[in-house]
Image (tube, rainbow, N blue to C red; front, top):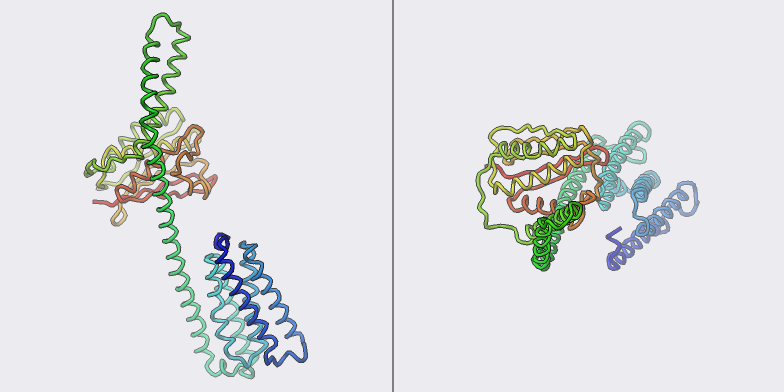
Length: 402
């Protein structure tokens, strides 16, 4: 219902809806041959006009999948009813060809394909009726060239399909572009925040940590007291790591030169590095990398990216699960996939990944994923998540190959 949050859009919609309703009412009363007898056909037409009018007026308040389906079905029944009630009006046949085009306005592929299949099924029954029952009595303009009209009808459905396909593809590209703008905005905001406070926080932490380290070596303190001091130093170290992540986002090291990196070697190195970490969680990392996979990145940043992603996969996995890491060339890209069998993520959780301080881990800061997004974007790569709640996650990373 976001399109109706704007008062101007809502006003335009109501104007168009009232015009459509006025045209349908005009069709009922203006020179209608069935108006005088008020027979079953005319009453059916009247009822469909009332139902469709109510659906159109209520749509801004109830923009749901069910409501859209109702509008699609009622509209289809309405146009087929007009075709059978007023056979002398040949233009009704044109409206039948355009029924699926109405569902394009909803930008919902499920509704469009339902409308297209429903219209094709209805057309089969329609042409069957004309050929087997009517014999051109009322629909002579169709019977005279039945095969040609059948071909033209299905050709129109193909044209409508391509219109939807191209429109839907462009909408998805615009949505992806919008998400990229959002991600850039997140990085900018976090960078500004980090630049403003990181150094000011790190300086007093360094002073406090230094004094605590002196106290830890002081023989006048008891062992229990030294244990408490050691715990405080560890927590300060954690805080320093968070600040370092802030600075990494705020001031990416663009001056670091790229180099030709063999993906297989780096992946195996990271897997060996995280081997003991996986054992703590009773997890094992399986690496399967094709030869001749080379990309142009900074080795340290690429390694940091893989450590974050693979470490997340281990933490998301259940005890005894296997984390699978694969890499191979696909056309002009090297595609790296990290697969876990964990809880998976919902669509809303995937959208929020990379947001400052958003993390699915109890002690996570969300900055690790932000750094991953920044590294991938820096080297003109992409990162996507294939996941569903209860079905694990596949992280797909693409870099241009060299």
